[in-house]
Length: 206
Length: 108
Image (cartoon, rainbow over all chains, first blue to last red; front, side, top):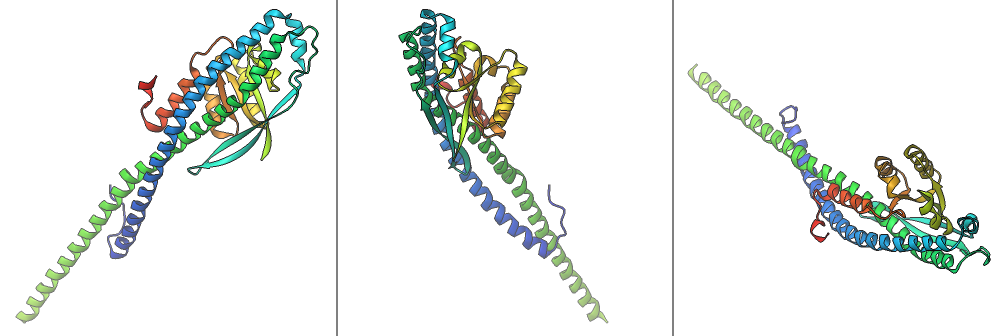
């Protein structure tokens, strides 16, 4: 589909400029897409491995807690953990990864996790608690990575749309319109030439 | 850098460990409740919300929405009942969306 423009020289120049810009934009976006995908694949690979590791360790941490519950009464376990002695929170920063802003989480903890009495609590609980707390930084890292994967996937999709729009819509349209204008101008020129020849002939006859 | 809280939505059994580690735990019994919780947490300055697979499988759309539109990162974790691979499934989906095909199929 060609654009609806007047076939004159000014439009032609304007369209040629637009085509040059579109081509350059297309090349840049294509490069960006390639780089994004490269980053994305590396990140996903890492993410997958980390997730498998975390899921495995989480499972064993759960088991530890179940073990702790088995040797203690449910009530005293609840009492021991009712008010956690430790506070976990995050400092969130932003990292620019290929112009996608992905979060960076810094994990912070304060307090003593084992703030319950020794009476009525078992050693298993302590072990379970510490295994869980050791696991947390990995969980945070996993959250950070998965968020980055999601954001990157979005950005790749967006970039691909733009690349395709340029490649399959805008650039062909501009090319077609430019060739249309060129032909039209050539035709006008030929028409003018024949008209001139004809006029000259008429003038000579008189 | 500002500080953010860490939250967790899930069943009671799973939440014990998280609670002990100083994470704010919320116990959800019905999906609608969990959805409202998640949306509220995302607004209230939580940096990460852990959601168990059981609950996450019922509100995938909400999780997508939160992950995409807010600063909050929602991470799907297996619950005490064991992993059903939903977390990996979602990584796969992201890959398919970005690249077009699942390029890691052979390595599974």
